[in-house]
Every structure is written in C-alpha cells, then in structure tokens.
Image 1 (spheres, helix red, strand yellow):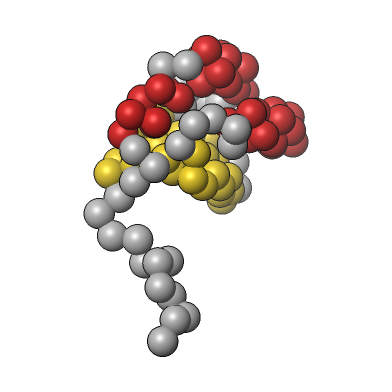
Image 2 (cartoon, rainbow, N blue to C red):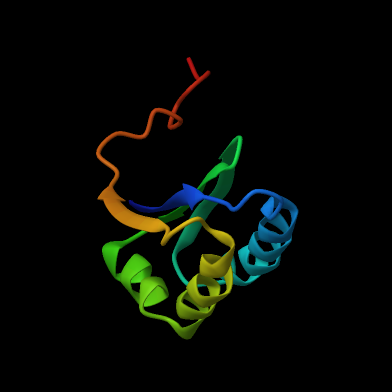
Length: 101
C-alpha cells in the first residue's frame, strides 16, 4: 500500500471554502482505481489530506491524472504558499487485526 500526503496552511478565513472543495473532490478521488482510504486532518489553519492506494501504480496513475492536477490548481490559491505533497510506502498497517483475538 502507498500513501500520499498533501499538506500546508490555509489562508485565514478560507477553511470553509477549502473544506467544501476537498469534500467535492473526495467523491471523485474515491472512484479512482486502487483507492483505499481518504482523510482530511485539521489543526487550526493547517490541513493534511491523506489518500492511500493499493499499489504504487494506482497512486502514480492518480497523481498523474487530470483529476489530481485540477484539485491542485483549485486548492493551491487557498493556501499560504504552495502546499507540500509527499508519497510514502506503507511498511506497517497497525489497523490490520486491531481488536481481533
């Protein structure tokens, strides 16, 4: 599994607009091949968008898609500066088997 993090600081007073935009796009992203998980985290004006994908190829196909480019073009003007995007390979998934005996 592979995870993509998208993070930065939203301009003051722009969080509601950013949230609406991200919610709108989340439905489209969730329909992409290999999509496994999506989350939006917030701490004050800082946000982290998380998507996880079953394979590296699935993540790469999404990252290179027009949908990802459209999201980046739409959300970037709401940030203070340019948001950061990082990709990670998931080495351990602690949710697998949690609570099972």
